[in-house]
Image (cartoon, rainbow, N blue to C red; front, side, top):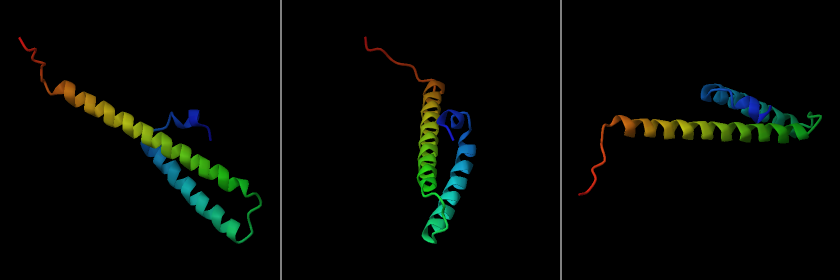
Amino acid sequence: MKAVELRTLSIEELKKRLAEEQESLANLRFQLSTSQLESPIKVRSVRRDIARLQTLIHQKEADAAKNAAAGTTKDSGSKEVKPS
């Protein structure tokens, strides 16, 4: 999963994919503990995907909060008063 592909998704879709990856990580850890996992490298790649998803979610939420804050200051109708 590439970050370029993930940037096109909405926050809700990213959160859904994050939940799926976390479930996948739990399954992989269970398989690892029972010695049924063929490649332990899969655990590392899923952990990195989870970190990538969390980073993108935080970035998008911060951008949304910043845009919402910028929108409220413009709509408040307050004008700067210059001292004379």
